[in-house]
Image 1 (cartoon, rainbow over the protein chains, first blue to last red):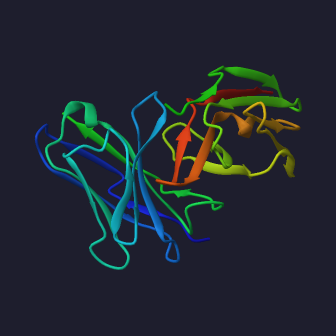
Image 2 (cartoon, chains in turn orange, blue):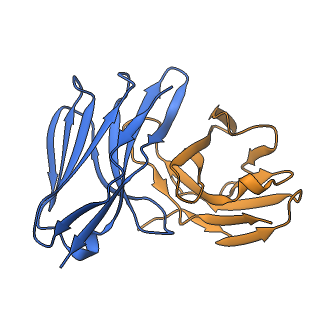
Length: 114
Length: 114
């Protein structure tokens, strides 16, 4: 069964460092997403990406965050200068379309900022 | 602010019983409704999706949607200890400036005891 894959599964980084989280969405999907879940809290939407541009972003997704689809398969989330409060599980997800289709989640990348 | 509310539980049921999980949402424009299961430290896994009023059954799971009451529920029949997890209700509003992002509830912790 096709799946969304993410790397790394776990990363520890020092505060202020840049982090890039990588994702390979399901191959025929057109919409890509990043969500995050701080330990013990809700899964929160960060950003959606379609047709090589951001289609929607949340208040969390400030100037420290950026997304990119550098080639035909990868989808990345960059955090420019990490803060302690960025520690969370980051989930990449994808779907075939924006409505009426299921969003499939990757296994997540656990980011710890120290 | 678009909200999705769930009783955080924990909900404890004996093996073989019916577990009933409930969710309300605030945005009347919501079009798609999902139940995800999340084991500790893992990603959300889709259990059921429902798009129109009424019941939808899939094996031991039944999703119920009432758009007038802005209410969606999940029934798990013949509950098994392996069903013990956090169940996330997610709502999607596509169209306009929304590109299909999911808004999650805080999740209901379900424990099925032998």
